[in-house]
Length: 227
Image (cartoon, rainbow, N blue to C red):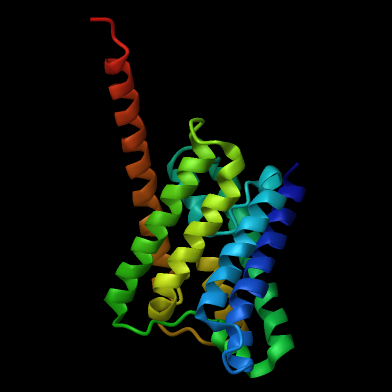
């Protein structure tokens, strides 16, 4: 049934924005009580929890670029892409308006805005998104990786991406995460970066992991060929 899966994506993406992006708004509201490290932990933590709580229902994509990446990898049906993306955008928007209701004008700090030149910011988003999707491909599509580590691996890559990229671009890696706060606050500066960067980075990551997977299979066959 599609309904529970879409509800799962809505709930998970709501949590991502309300807790992850919300922590950035609360940090500003509280004069730095959360800190940059705390914001990164909030993002990584909510993703970790969402993967374990919702992954078995919808896959816990929580990100239009991840859904797109799985489609590129031919591991997700094209007919499901639009419903997933709509659910993700709706969840992110609802989460952003909830943040605005809690902290008022400080919700603007939940938005993603580049602090470096636009094309440098685009390159950062591509790179961060690449590493996120590379990890997702490993834990979600490769039977050699223990499924139990999926939440930890994805949560940690989100956290370290946020630690490095947060001050530069907001470390979005997720069009929905940027779209919801932008809509709730009317802040659309350089918004296109947060669609183009993740989509490119994750598509390249999918192709890269498939190449690495084929290389391992070939080398494994050679290693096990009798002399």
